[in-house]
Each structure stands twice: as structure tokens, then as C-alpha cells.
Image 1 (cartoon, rainbow, N blue to C red):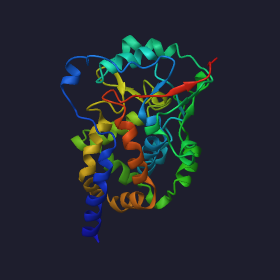
Image 2 (image 1 turned 120 degrees about the horizontal axis):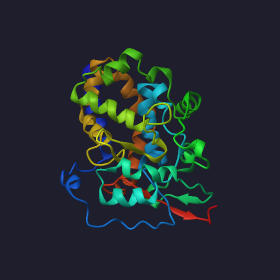
Image 3 (image 1 turned 120 degrees about the vertical axis):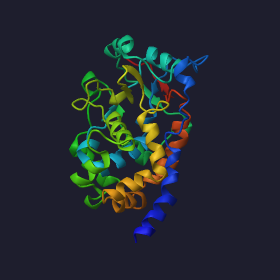
Image 4 (image 1 turned 135 degrees about the vertical axis):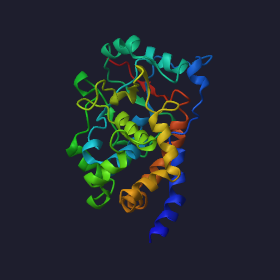
Length: 288
């Protein structure tokens, strides 16, 4: 049985490598790219992690690992301020938080309806489960909450038998000082759940995070923990889960939920975000 599960994992997990795939190109950190993609300021730009498919992929993994942690995923999405977008397009590896934090304090709220590009269009069944657009300041970086997380897990076909025990969870993320792979897992989980109450600088509604070096970037920027996390799906994640006694739960999630379908559907969308990992929507209406 153990050999069967290992073989099945090797066969399934490479599919997941399609998510968050960008090259960790060192030259991106050395100098800005020559030109931005010229976003229309009349539209809005978001991180791919706020699209339905990718949000649900992240939710399924986090809920499996720790439902209380999944409850810190964002309940609402918010457009990234245009000056931040312009900087990240030129500097995908990040922009100084100290220079750009003020733009988040100047967030403007409107009632425009904005639509994802075709490559990111979701099935209506799943689109309604993704974060809604924030309409007031209190909703920015608001966590999903445990009650809504449990409801979402039920809708996605998850059950108690798929959830890691506390011991399994702490084995998977490790205890400081963590080994390299567990450090990647831990940091990716933290970046995905940087909502109010779970982060020094909450930015979950934007799909952004601030690095230890003080740089603001998309959570799927080049060489970010959630990008490096993908490399673990070639086998190392399964090995870690096996070491921790949680491999069967990982396999159940892969085979008994729509996780792999969400990954397949969401991959082209995220790939369209370019090195900065940003998605421009098309907006209708006058706003205020």
C-alpha cells in the first residue's frame, strides 16, 4: 500500500507544478524591466491569488493543513494602488514598502463592476466562492473566519478525515530552526494568510506581502516562498507528509476534491500575470 501511494503521488503531484510557475531569474532583482505593460488606470489590477480557482487551490491546501490557518485567508479583495502596480511592473522582485505604504492609506472605494480577462474567467459556481470586492475600509484584509471557512470546506467536499492532526501539521511545517523545505512551506502559508490579526503588515486583500528586507511584492513574485513551494510538489512534499503520517490525507484531497481541476483551470490565468504576477481587470461604470 505504501509503495502504491508513493507511486500515485509521483504521478499526480507534477500536475500541480503548473501553478505559480515563473523562473527565479536573478537579473530581475538587479535592474528594472525596460517597460511596464501599461495598465489602463481606469481599470483595476489584482494579484492572481484573488481569482476563484487559485484562491480555492490555496484554501484546500491550507484547510487540510490547519482549518484555523485557512480562516485567515482574505474574505475580500481590493485593487492594488496604481503607483504600486507601476513600480512592481518595473521591479517584480519588490518595491520599498516605506515608499509605497501611503498609497494603501489613500484607498478609494467605488461601486464599479470589474471583470477578469477571459483566461481568468471562472465558472459561476466557483466565482461566488471567491473574495468579493471590498466596499468599505473595514473589509480590507478582513479574514475569512472559521465559520465561513468550514462552510467553504463543506461545499468543496472536504471532511474531517482530510485534515491534519495538530501533531501532523507541526511536523509538516517544522519547528525552528526549520530545514529548508519546511521553511518554504511555513513562509508560503504565512504569506497567503497575512490578514488582520495574523500579520504585522496585513495585505491579504491585495495578494501582496512585505519581505524581511522591507520590499513589497506579489505573493507569487519570482523566487517568493509560494513559487519555491511548487518545487516541493515533485515529490518532497509527499515525502514530508509520509514522514509525518499524513500522506493518505494528501492523496484523499487530491483524488476526492476538485483540487487538480482548479489547478488546471487556474494555471493559465496566473501565468498571464507576467513576472510581477499581476492581473488587470476591465471595469464598467463610473464608480462613486
